[in-house]
Amino acid sequence: MLFKKPWTFSDKAEFMAGAGPAWVHTRQNGITRNAVAGEVVADFMFWPSGRHRFGWFVEPGYQFTFGPSRERSIGVSFGLLIGIR
Image (cartoon, rainbow, N blue to C red; front, side):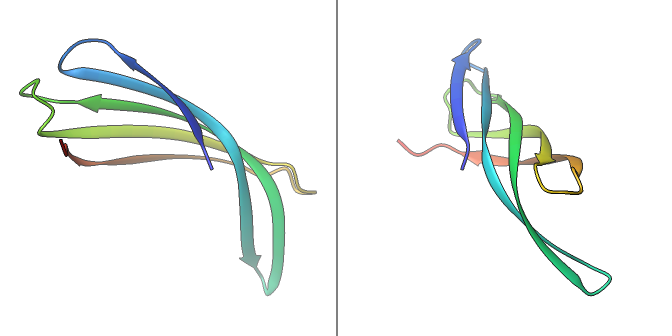
């Protein structure tokens, strides 16, 4: 569950920063572990026409686990946006 704060740079560019808790379920070498984690993301949204009908986004993220192994991970999500009015 992430809590995000939006900022509008222009009609064609928006940014959202978010943070929140996460639950991590891992299975490695036959051992299953559950842990509480924290996640931080940055959403960059681009609307080519400025009318917010179609666009795309890039979302880099960082996650850190509070479990005994203190795992850390980074990732990037990207995709298309379809605005609904």
